[in-house]
Length: 584
Image 1: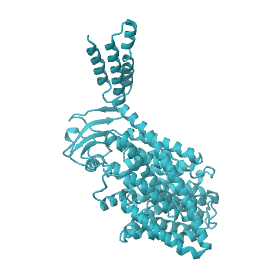
Image 2: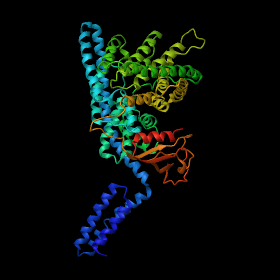
Image 3: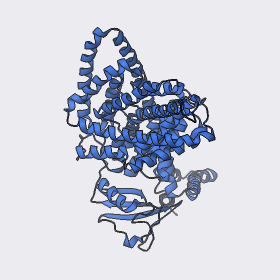
Image 4: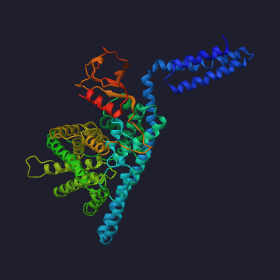
């Protein structure tokens, strides 16, 4: 056999063994070229030549062993998970900076409004500064509409509807606009912007790390999970939120990638802020089983308040749409002035307000005032389109609701009065119920409160309250707020136009993975009879840990994941068609 033949054999083997693994193929090519050079030299030492020729065999054997243990799908899954770790580290750093900025901004606003209360002559100067800030924020929103409001609906639109997102301009607006609004104390949270910061950061890094649209969507979803994880130091909630709200499916690949990114960003956040939970409720009293019947009125109350919060946010957004865009942030900043001077606890996202509820002791009048003002202030701030989230303000409203129910239950005139020591417990439980009713994300609500409070002993009453509140929301026919906000955004921006720097996800061909739900049209159908639109074809079915290429007689079962190749249509149209077929 000639030297060239000796060169061709290992090269072909390498191509057959690792044609899907670029790194292994590159290493194989380097080893093969080394062997070719060694053979061409024709050294006189037989043992030396034998040692040279044995160099490529060991890597090939190792590659073959690895490939025997890992299927093609497993290799892709762990490769994307490794990229999620890289993305999670970058997202963790950026969200930590954002958290620090928002925290200092809220402290500054609280101090300034207290100073203005003692020095009213400077109110005019502060109002003038608020007008200038409002105009600047309005200009930022007009420049990058994708960075307005919460950011969670826009992120969901990028992942599930093929919308486009300009990573760098979103990061600029989120930091410049969000931190400026924080300095004036707007009632907006950090979680929504953190989710979009994570998604934008992952998209920016995904341009170099991702291999195709599937990788890119997985990285964007993992970035969103990492953003929420770093915002609340809650990695399980971040991963679950990405699956429940952003990606809207429980793909094993997405779960692994989101979990990798969430844990990494959580490590970065805990390294900077310490191991103490965001809401330090670890020392509060546990609710006795004999008091569990109180969860029924508490669940009903939090369900009603969650529904009211949902309707108020959407209603004021509709009302504010009739106001000129440049004036909307100015109105929200004007509302912040009396709120900051009269009820400073309502400023910012609501961490100070939740801590106040934990301590207890507030009267019914103060609790009612805080509840009404916080709801209206939050709705006004959000309706202006200013960059900020609603997660934390909803949690703050829920804590007030829980404290209000506990305070009412502790009135001495009642035949079975509730001990006031359980006010803080009701505040914790109320947060989960209100959030679940407003967002229709029950699993995330339960996990988030458990992780944020640092105490798993409250999981049972929290879960019970969430189920009751969710039932109230369904009875009231409440739509998930982020889904409604996404529909509104798309209606207002039908083309989702950006500049040349926008990352297009609405491609004309590609691959989409979608879960088949129980009761859907596709579940139980043979592939040959599946009513797939023209230009779409199911190329792989994932059933448990097994992947197979279906034939026309293959039956699609509920719980399967179908990998669909689409052509001559946008990803948004493909996902819309799959939603019709695969959702129950």
